[in-house]
Amino acid sequence: MSRKRALEMSTSGLAQADVVNAAPIHMGQMSTAIGDSASNEALERLKRATQDVKNAENSKLLNRAIVAVHKQEFDKADKLALKLLDIDDRLGLAWHVLAIAREKKGDYASSLRAYEAALTLLTDHASVASDLGRLALRIDMPELAVGFFAHFRLSRPNDLEAANNLASALRELNRESEAIEVLKDAIAIHPESPQLWNTLGTVICNTGDAAGSIVFFDECLRLDPQYSKGRHNRAFAKSDMGDVEGALADAEEALKRPATPHDHAIMEFAYSTLLLALGRMEEGWKAYDARFSRELTDAPMFYVAGTRWSGQDLNGKHLLLSAEQGLGDEVMLANMLADTRALLGPEGKLTLAVESRLIPLFERSYPDIQVTPHRTVSFEGRVWRTYPRITDYSQFDYWAAMGDFLPSLRPTVESFPDRRAFLTPDPERVAHWKAELDKLGSAPKVGMLWKSANLTSERARQFSAFEEWEPVLKTPGVTFVNLQYGDCEAEIAYAKETFGIEIWQPPGIDLKKDLDDVTALCAAVDLVVGYSNATMNLAGAVGTPSFMLTGAASWTRLGTDYYPWYPSVRCFVTQQYGHWEEAMANMAEALGEFIAK
Image (cartoon, rainbow, N blue to C red; front, side):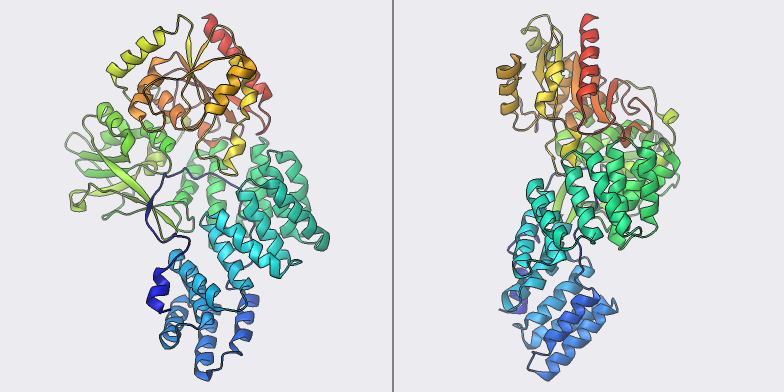
């Protein structure tokens, strides 16, 4: 196998550029995987392995490369490993060193290829499998990580790292019961390990039992009060319980001792959302810049030439403004679009890049703004936002992400305008849907949303089980309209069979793809009820009265009991994720009052 060919291979396909749906970055539990491919222990193990290399010169070069990794001279280690591979491209240890160097440089795709080559060539697969698992977990490939960690654990069944990391990957796949079994066995062998107690806490929190998880985080911090990951994850659990002040205190302590730059970026972003949840907006927006850290592999990287705006006078300038993060964020941050356009003055120009499905809506809403699509791709383990229709960046004086204007245009809650709507639905399609809805009778039409398409292991806890909607669905005098995108046939059938409630399916519309028509449908119904997903944001942006279920620590409320971004949205807050009964009952009561009016 030649070096060139091996570096072009990737069984995971992670090096390929794939179009992806960008997702919002959320405060989350910190990955509990432990170990480091460049730790002293790992490098000592590599040094011992070089003793089996028969060629003395190759052995010397390997040792020099390992020393370079130890000194964090990763470019040097990279060059030395490549020099060795030019001599012998079947030298597995050289591939392993190259993989470590590339990983530490942030070149995740070629690092994975090099790890794969090492896995093929080395007799001892365990350490390579462990390194591969951690890297796969970091770049959000938990299915691969489970396989690699399981392989590692087979060779070291009593190893703390092997059990902990396998459980961490299982948690990411919502396989909590399996993760708990792995951890119970490991804790029986290593009861004094703060890492295992921390991981168990994250698994329990994942099930929606934030209060139960605190016991395990407390034990982790009793064993090691300086363990920053445990402190951060306890902050996460406290925020789920509505204890935002307590969460902030833990987050501040965690930030004092991040183990790595990657940990620091995660902690800083979490810290920003907690500040915002408390209404401390000046500090919060400043820390919110952490969402663009290169250390966060799910943070969007903007593939754009030119100067990024950083507060310069924009009067008379041409600005390229890019949407950021997920679809709901694109709509929410458009709350500032008219104000951003005003900064450019009558002689200035604004080019706005949004998700292609939103283009007709934004063109109609802002005829004086040029609207172009962005394209989000996954490439070499990173998320990139590109602009396929823009070929000449010299026309722009500056470019900016939408959220760059938050500190200046939305420094306080009072700075949000009392603007009921800032997007304009297609009036002909609104009329069409009103006519269709009229055919269903005179009862008020209530659009319904109950989940997100992006139900990761942590995001899932922000939504209730469908059966908990019973008090809302049984409100008399209502015609429910399905606004939920994705596969929802099971829930609609459940509502009919269990509650005797028909949820009307609007014909001839793709609720995921036809966003302009979805917006018109949102404008046509009398009320929208549900959680904060992309469609709820569209309903709020066109001023439809909406009831939104949300958590006590939801940062987008900015410390208020309402939703500053959308004056038409009324919030129903649960004090703790996983406990929706009271919020559902309150919404059902409010729905009854709405119908009575």
